[in-house]
Image (tube, rainbow, N blue to C red; front, side):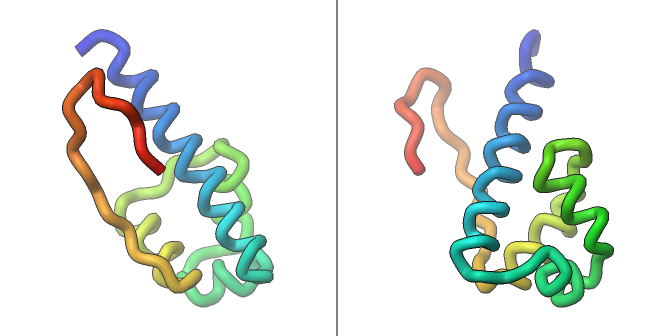
Length: 83
């Protein structure tokens, strides 16, 4: 499983960028999302900047606060990625 840690970090970085994009497109502040998700604004800011990896529960709360749901897919290695 060499390199799996790098893959996890890349996926979390991608999620962080998407959450920030979705938050901004919904014209929500970090304070609004954090309050609705029951977390601190600083925790959300650390997640969006890639300095913190939230738990799955945290991801679900943040997504719900922005009106999204999280779907987890298993994709065969070597398959083309989808957005």
